[in-house]
Length: 254
Image 1 (cartoon, rainbow, N blue to C red):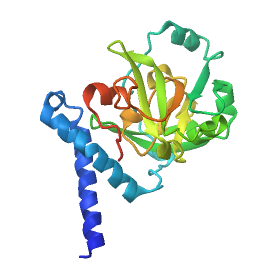
Image 2 (tube, rainbow, N blue to C red; image 1 turned 90 degrees about the vertical axis):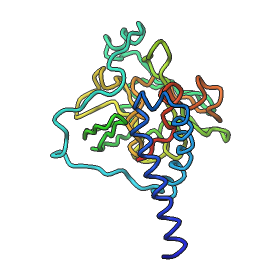
Image 3 (cartoon, rainbow, N blue to C red; image 1 turned 60 degrees about the horizontal axis):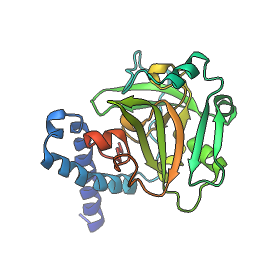
Image 4 (cartoon, rainbow, N blue to C red; image 1 turned 180 degrees about the horizontal axis):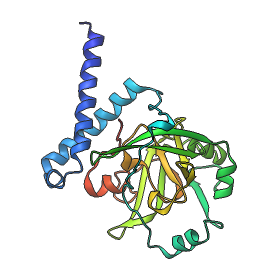
């Protein structure tokens, strides 16, 4: 066996270990263990590097219409109590706009009609949840990279942060990805699911689809995208609600 093969096998093993940690990350008993949390954090960087080295720009598998799941569980929050959100929902989001700001040349406020008028990507992909279930759905929306290109990124921008309308336990919900995933062709801002506009339980008016990561990274109820240089100092500093409060891995590659 060559040194290259040995290194590759070792990286595959590290990636598998990281994936196992992700599945176990949803277990409250393990989350109560300081030792487990330390192990989980240590696996994050290894999983991230191994995934990027092995996957590169590869696409997540796409499926046929005949493969669509008959039921698709709604992960995370299924409703939003915020009064402003409920008013937008009642009006069909007619006066709603997605805010794109932070480290950009031009801050944007994009109505849903403008996002629908952009070139669209439609993809049928499998949603893999950290809780152990999966389902296949059809998603449509503009590529996130196109939206970011419209805003024009400043050189210091490194991460896209998704600020959402829902709250869990009184805390704001948010998620983040790096620019490699942000500009991946399958990373879209989906406003349509299974040939119909997103209903509330699936994240209306807009949800992130970042197909090479586990389901908790697919932020729902997206209101604002902020470009930042660092995740430090942003809420709990770990890059997402579940990362901050349940010690989930920031990079959830599959």
